[in-house]
Length: 262
Length: 169
Image 1 (cartoon, one colour):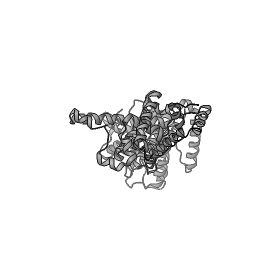
Image 2 (cartoon, helix red, strand yellow; image 1 turned 45 degrees about the vertical axis):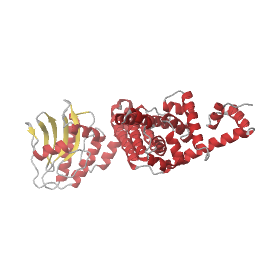
Image 3 (cartoon, helix red, strand yellow; image 1 turned 180 degrees about the vertical axis):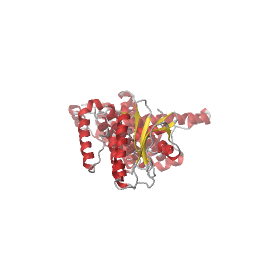
């Protein structure tokens, strides 16, 4: 019985199965020359692996694992965005999620404070921010007065904060962004809390136009509750103005890169 | 449908592959610093094109192919560079591009030296089958040649190594 070189090599490399493999194995068993060729091939493989295998047990550089972890985080973020785009196919899930969210908001809500129905995850985050903010903060002594009507353009620190701050980042400072969204005309709008007053500002060619501002309340008894309902009012107004969901963290950053120009 | 699951799996599997990818990189590039660079570039490329990976197919073969192509690009770039700076006659004696400096060859030991002397196409065939354990068909797909070409390169590489390492192998 003869074994060709190709057959022999294929056997050595584990390419043969079943009857073919048995035939070559039998030939090797009956032929010392073939047996020593097999041994030489096995030693060669062992030498090569002995040379390179140690690399595979070295610690992997962190730069590599970190690069992959960063990509995984990016995917997770994009998934959240994608989910919104696929909303129609997942209505049931969303309805259930919304119901759960409403329950959570109700549970978290102190008595006599009415919050509007939030319109998405971003707003749910904003809701918790509002609660944290208004139930934890000290109302400024100089409670600002309500202004509305006319085209009030934000300037100074307010304009700067509206340009730079992110709702998702809990940055220190007097100005906090509660949520960001797009209005029907495509302009970006942001609900902010500037300490003494809160409002909604929308960006157009002139700058940040204040759509609505409310005082957060005078330093009187019950000021906290008023402050809470002021923010609730703004969020309700924002919900009416907005098209779609509030911006998520990634969208917000993207909008900031574009200087909030639609 | 389960986009997130497949992406998660991609990143998990890629992380699990890193030790093997580093071994393959070292086999191709030989120089540890070059191998690290190669690995870095490969992971970057793999992540960039991760949307094109078909879930359910072998990720290892997919990434190995990226690494192998990346290395061939590097070898070609080095060839161009060395041809720019040397006369043609000298260039012919420079050996396979990507070859190590003589002092590094000493540190490689017998096995490393024998591997380093193989032409690029034989070395990759030998490493994919004998070290990385790919089947002929898979190795041929990674390199992008017919299986017959792979086995003939493998055969020639194996012969050369046995000749060179005869007394220890």
